[in-house]
Image (tube, rainbow, N blue to C red; front, side, top):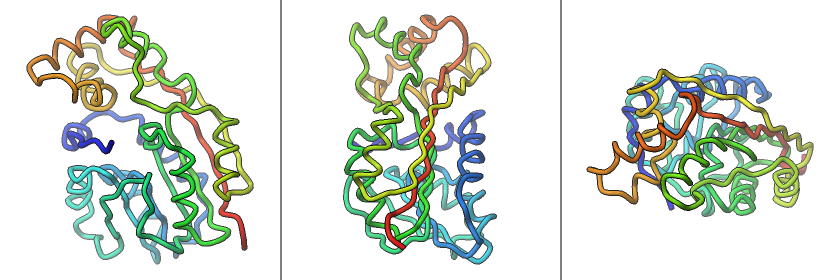
Length: 247
């Protein structure tokens, strides 16, 4: 199910996503003239950096959240002539073909059907096109999940934190070659109190909060935060690169 996000609060937080984006872009081979599919563009922070690397190219920015796309539209108002925006579900066939590359940061762990996801991205790319991505991987936010289990009495089923070898197999089955996959621990430390609780509310626990009345949100977040030994989100990133088969 596609979630809506509090895009304004999301953009105001000290997101580790910024370094994940830079790190992922460094792995994307570009000449500057490509058309690049960004799968899960969010508020456009990485789109902005990507456009700087594409002085003669353009970005196809895809996200399921209308609020995120509205924020991207405001951020890149002076460069929208080089951005094609699509509100779309990545688990359904995309209205895109022949893209020269694909790029994604902090999106795929929200999607359970990775076989379908990778197949859809493969169909959107030309043969030989590179595909680089970052998302939460096996072991991601383990302490947060344990805290959630204590508060709710059940294991959270929100995310899909895939392992390296299963991701390799799925990419190859979807038609990718030259696959490289790694799990990279990368914890994020925040300020205790308001900042940490706002981060948990906006970035981490949104799917759980969607199921609760708004009046219960603050107490729920504080209960989860109280179960954590320090204001740290124990991220483990799944980073991969591949190429669409063919030439």
